[in-house]
Image 1 (cartoon, helix red, strand yellow):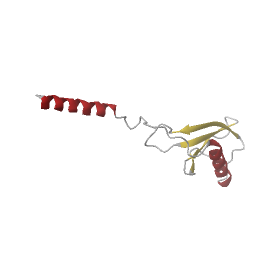
Image 2 (image 1 turned 90 degrees about the horizontal axis):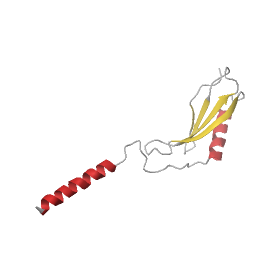
Image 3 (image 1 turned 90 degrees about the vertical axis):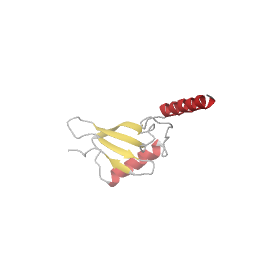
Image 4 (image 1 turned 60 degrees about the vertical axis):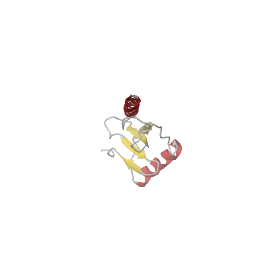
Amino acid sequence: MNKLKISALIAALSLAAVLQTPAPGNAKTIQPPAVDMNEAIAIAEKYIRTHGVDISRHMLASVKYMNMYHDYEKPYWRFEWSPLFTSKGSQIYILVYPDGAVSMLAAKDE
């Protein structure tokens, strides 16, 4: 009888452990920025100059640190430049990753 109770207890504990395991989208930890915001903006501005991205009719409208709570996705800084005149151009998103890599998501001005 004791073996049966121990087996039931082990089964219950195993089930509890499975139920408490976070799903892939639920972070167990916070990923703080490896590159601070000032460094990231300098990297983004260098990218803009080097690649000839025309932001003369845009303003920096948003800065956000993305994927801070995702265990399985690389975090990055997202800088959004919005057009000063809605009929001219589109938003420009520059992404700066912890390793200094940069990418641009939006199209240049029309």
